[in-house]
Structures are given as C-alpha cells and as structure tokens.
Image 1 (cartoon, rainbow, N blue to C red):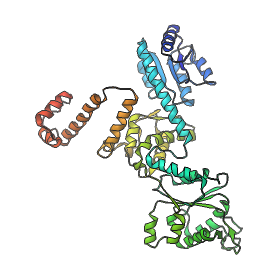
Image 2 (tube, rainbow, N blue to C red):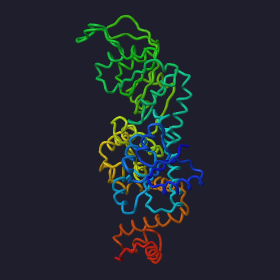
Image 3 (cartoon, one colour):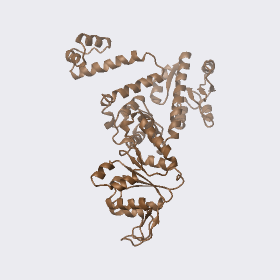
Image 4 (cartoon, one colour):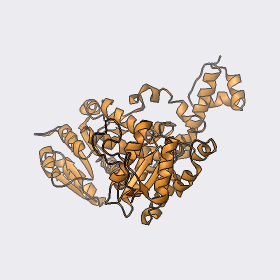
Length: 465
C-alpha cells in the first residue's frame, strides 16, 4: 500500500503524526511544504494526504487542486486552525475527505486517517474494476449471465440474437462478442436497419454496381463486404422490410449475395449478430417477420435486462460515466454524494443505460461543485425525491444506507435506524391527516396514546389538530 503523506511546515505537528502513525504501523512520508509534495507527485502517489492549509509557497488549497486534477479519488484530510474552518469548508466543499481543526486529538486524527485509508482502498478497487470491464459493467445476476454467455461464445462463431430495450447496451454486447472471438482482429461493422430509409437499405447492406440506379456513379461496397472476415451487427432487425428479410435469409442459407445491379455472386464470410427491442415471436405471428429468418437468427439468444431490473449496478455505472465524461470533456472529475447515488439507484430510467450516461454527461457540464448532490440534478430528476423511496424502492434505499453505515464501521445500527423509520412513518401520516393524531394513529395501526408517546420520544412535537 502507498504511504500517507503529511504536509505541514510545523515540525511539532509532523513529529506527533509521524510517531502516532508509526505506532499504528501505517507507512508515512512527510513534507515541509506543498511545493515539495507537488514535486514528489510527479514520481509517486500517496494513498491518503494530511495537509495544512497555510504554508510558505504553495498552499494546501493549491496542492489539493493539483492532486484532484490528476487523482480525484485520493482522500485529503485538511488540518486547519479553528478560525480557518469556515473558509476551508467554503473552499473545499466536496473536495476534502474531512477537516481536522487544530489543536486536534491525536487518537481522533489516527482514526480519521484509518477511515480515509479504507475509503482509498475501496475506491481504488472500484476504479480498477471499472477500467477492466468498462465495455459492459454490472454486478447484477442478470448481467453475470450475459458475461458468462460471452465467455462461452468466445470459441464459437454462432449467430447471436440480442434482445433488450432501447438503451440497454446491445451494441456494446455485440462489440464484446466480436472482441472475444476468433475474428477479433477483423472488422466489426454495425448498421441500424431502422435508421436507414427503406429504398437505401438494400444498397447499404449489399453495395451496388456503377449505374445500378440514378446517382450510382461508382461501384460501392456494402456492409457485408466491409465486414468480410469479421462481424456484421444488424441492430433493430425487427424493423427490416420484408423484401430485405428475404435477401438476408438467402445470404444466411447459401452464403452468397449480389450487389444491387450486379450479376456475379459474392461469397460472404461474415458472422451475423442481430439485436432488437421487439418481440420477434409476436412479429412472426403478425406476419411482419419471416419465421424461417427468425429461426436462422435465433441460434443463440441473449437477453439484456433493463436498468430497473439491475438497480444495484446504477452506482457503479453512474461513477464510470461521470469519469468517462470528465475525460472526454477534459473537465474536472466530479463525484456523487452517497445520497445522490441512493436517489439515482431508486429511479426507473426508462431510457436505460444510455439515459444514465446522458445524465452524467449533463452533470459534468452543468454542476458547479465537485460533489453532486440531489439538488444539482435536473428538475425532472430531483422533483420526485420522496417518490423515489416509496414502496417498491424504499427497501433498496434503506439497504443502501445500512450498507454504507456498515462500511463505515458504525455500531448500534438498529438503534440508530429504527427511530428514523418510525419518525418517517409518523410524519407522513400526520402530514396526510393535516396533523390530526386520531386519524394518523388509525392509519398507522397504533393507539392514540402510543402515537402521542412516540411523538414526544422522537421530539416531533407535532401540534394537535
């Protein structure tokens, strides 16, 4: 593990921290100025930083800004005199891990450093996982099934049909199937059959000969030729016109096709992967999709779950997209507060992963502070804060909060959370009845005296109506 960096021009502060960290078997490195630490940052990185604000030369503020531009996930504990605390909070809102007012209790300081180390290890593990599996992310069981299928198909060139709602990442899965196949070094060509006008789609797929139609001034290779030896991904296959379904079936049956206006057959050596958000079986019954083509395409079927069925993946995806947006926009890396992640995790996201990515892109551009709170979300996302934790989703939000408390090493969790639970129930009931306790007690299923006692115990002091 990397060292804890101590940055302070006060020798006595450095000495106290060094001795305490040594006793706690925590590796450390000390600097007398922020400039020294900045120079060291070019060669190595700390696990955690404990820094004073005011020092000769560059300030602790300067160092924090430089550090977070390069390594936004490294926790920084700011040491400050009490009179500087207000300015520190204002300057570092969301930037610092914690504040340590001087003079401080050394045991408290070491405990704070331990917590920062734990967060740093946790965040480092998260980032490592994101970088390894950035093509498709997910811990949910349904996504693990997709990952297993991609692994099993790595030695196969079978035709694959991907089912999933719009925005679930069907093209990403198609890319992954190609990258993990024997054709990985050959072309991957994608075409959205629903996005191309019907009269142009045939030429787009199979190419055309010069003079085949008005405007065909030169011979043009189609997507099948471009994908030769590799993979052709046909997105929204359910919208393919009937006449083109017939031509595609012929290619899959005998392996040959013709350019538009051509007379020489061209041999197709292409793996076909298709995707649709529609129910192809239903379209077959309605006569909108050829049954024989459906069976040709439906050799291996993968179903991508919508985001509402894999809510546990939302925080991981949100952090990744925020990181990705910052890199693409060459912008400061922002972070979500735990409350915001909990709130997002309770949303339905009808546009699925693509909608979450677009939201993160918007937040990267529009959020002024480094830490994104619920109030920073667009109005359509923040107006339903209460609704986001109502029945159906409230247990997810509660589980998330309890998990965070456990990770922080908190004790007495039942004692802490039970009053919050009761408080919420009582306040909502009283709000619903405009403060009428008898009605609220009936709705809650408790006696009026019990309700009055709990109001007093919880310090609600709701006026009787």
